[in-house]
Length: 260
Ligand code: ADP
Ligand code: MG
Image (cartoon, rainbow, N blue to C red; front, side):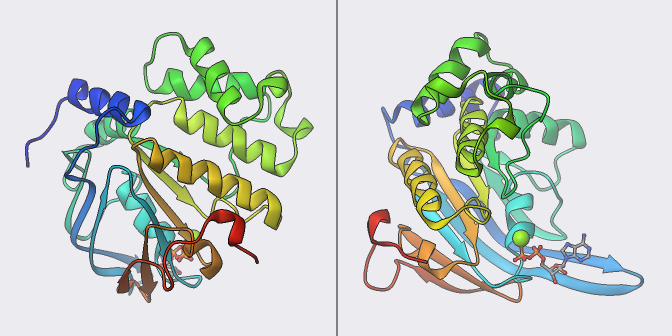
């Protein structure tokens, strides 16, 4: 696989954002990936021999109970942790074996990361939080990008609010807008509805689904089986291993059909 330059990745991001053209190859590719944590001489295999592919335009849910390796998987794909074994490539870039500098560059230009607990800067307004996302990715015109992204997530009238002045669902929307402001093609979300009530969670899922429709590769991890029903594909993890990978049983459900 060719190692792409920043320019290539950024044009992939632009393509993903507008949905003009879909890439036929996988944006996320894992081959034989393992992650072993060593703690006080004890080895814990958080992931073992994981193979996974996610293409542009796909909404994939990784489902598994607590401790099954979901966060570990997401952190590896996002270049926030290093695999013990195997190969990971994201948007044509090899993540495994990359230097710290190359990984920093990778994170800035390849992924949008969304956390369960939002991780907004409490001293920055919604607009400033989202501007930060665009600036971190080195984009010009961060202010107008941020306004546009906030409008897209339905928060045009909350731009000057600080996080503590927003509901949980609104904070998660700001976090999503911040991730999208990077313009990056791969969206990674770790239990993005875990802190939210059901109704708000459904609206957040709808927003994430829409990002796949727009051409991004979207990978959401959750312990909530109901959320998996809205996926194009469900990858089940058990004790760090993939035990199932396919369409949700009964076919993909509209998010409005979900209940938990
Ligand atoms: P999940 O997100 O599915 O709950 P994690 O990926 O967080 O699972 O953890 C998978 C396994 O790896 C668990 O057994 C957990 O205890 C272990 N683990 C995670 N992070 C570390 C760490 N930094 N050091 C040691 N063990 C860890
Ligand atoms: Mg987790």
